[in-house]
Amino acid sequence: MSLLRKIFQFSKTNPTPKEDDAASNEAINELENKPVDEKFAINFKNNGGKFLYCESMDEAFENFENIVYENKWEHSTLLCLDKALKEKFAKSTVKLSAEAVNADCFLATCEFLVADTGAILFSSEQITEKNIKEFPDYLIVFATTSQFVKTISDGLQGIKMKHPNRIPSNITTIKNFETPIDDNFMTYGSSSKKLYLLLLEDL
View 1 (tube, one colour):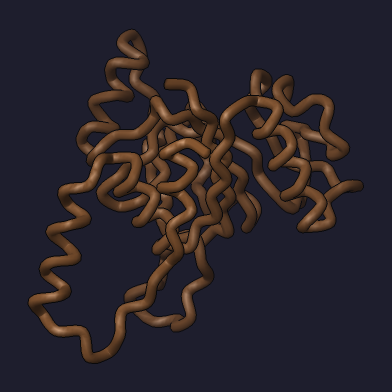
View 2: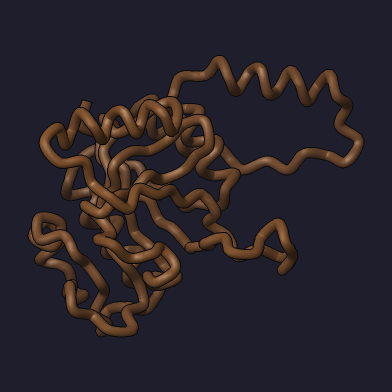
């Protein structure tokens, strides 16, 4: 089992009500000093995301099929705007279409995985000019280990380097992967999506 697989199997922990400030600060400092992949893993899972580490494309395909089966989407059509991504999962039991109306799930790639917040960074390359809220409640994101960045600023710089001739528009992040329990001003307007991350080892 690889180091990355072990990293992403960390359990989500809940702080105890009586946790003192010293212990809390120590935990924060410890997290800040972790490598970007491990830091992302912890923050992503604390955000409510579901992670599936894949050492090969065959394993990624198998995990994708398991997600489809788990959610009973075998006879559904899932939304996918990326032609290359549709080819990767073309042998799936589920149909992938850019024209899917009222789809149960959106399959997409992303620009980067942001370690310090556990967020997924998207642009118009993946979501066109649509708002994240316009997509289905379920998202399956296919990414690779080379897409880790430490901060949003690093991600924005990376986008400029990836697209030197034309910087994509509609750059946005999503980091809330659980439905907010309280409907108040702190959660108003946020985009909560149930998100699966298929992370393929490419380093």
